[in-house]
Amino acid sequence: MNQRAYLDHNATSPLRPEVREAVEAALSLQGNPSSVHAEGRAARAAVEQARAKVAALVGARPEDVIFTSGGTEANALALAAPAGGDSWHCYLSAIEHPSVLAGGRFHRETTTLIPVSPDGVADLAVLAEKLEKHKPGGWRPLVSLMAANNETGAIQPVADAAQIVHEAGGILHSDAVQSAGRMPLDIRALGADMVTLSAHKIGGPKGVGALVLAEGVSVEPLIKGGGQERRRRAGTENVPGIVGFGVAAELAAAELSRVNEIAELRDSLEAGVRGLAADTVIFSDRVPRLPNTSAIAIPGVKAETMVIGLDLAGVAVSAGSACSSGKVEASHVLAAMGVAPELAQAAIRISLGFGTGNTDIQYCLSALAGLIKRLKKDAKEAA
Ligand code: PLP
Image (tube, rainbow, N blue to C red; front, side, top):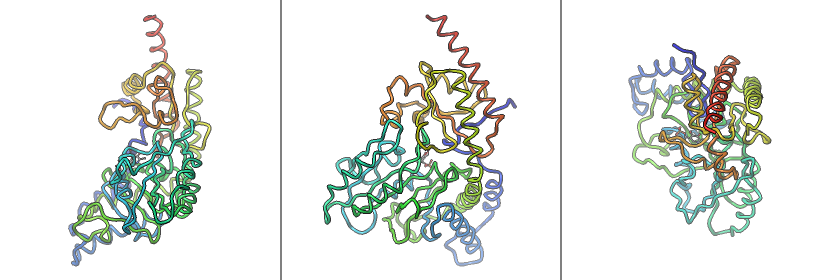
């Protein structure tokens, strides 16, 4: 097979070999975790072991982990309005993932967007100003601010936001899907009341995630019926998926020691791209970013052309914009940062992960060099 460099870990990280092994073994667990017999108890034990590992990744208690079908469902559950009968008003940063921006059960009239700076960081002064208007006894604020952005990697001021939100009597949810394993995460240090995780961004299986609660926080179930997940998410557990998630969480926590190495690889990639095209723009490079993420635009070169050209050359990256349906749409993240549409259309996202090495970076740079040379030649001939 031809050589490939997979640099799209923010879309999904390949399954880790240790996870594959654990999932394969878990497929042989016959019992339903809710059954009292030996087979059921064995499946229950596997789920609970995984729960402890996922809890440890964010410094939470195992009983506060609710397994879901992924990050999207966990976000929807967080935004389904917490239990307790209060009336809520929802505040979302403008750069949240679409599954948060959809707003759960909140209607547009009860949702407010919080703007971000040109570097892609949520503007907490605006949040504070909006929350000041909340009167005791009125609507309670439910705020969602991601730990780091999936397109630019920009790390968000979650702990500071939590302080503002709590002073206003509200609660804070943080989508940490892209941050797990890429920066230290601790639900108490973040000050978050709810944290979303997804297995497939950390080398686990697709289709499994979790909403993790701070001590004492409760949620209204989205999916009702059975008493699974302490009555917070009905349905027989996805035992192999959950087991794989547990192993991936354990490995992701250990991987934190490799963060500097990944950041160095990312930096050498960015230096290389700048060497190929001096006018390269790197988004959010003036603020703290995830070590693995690089959102790059070479003015005048369309993202689709780059993504297809790189793919043909053996390098997998994403268009910076959302591409959930195979069709590239304008990036709401770059738009919220005030990036001009022509530049946003050139944005690609290169994201590193476990297993990425210098060979991948050099391979990507040589593919980019060939592509840029060809595109420049084509542009000259067309002129
Ligand atoms: N939140 C963020 C920040 C993401 O990047 C993603 C996936 O791209 C999700 C949520 C959705 O997670 P899942 O694919 O597990 O539904």
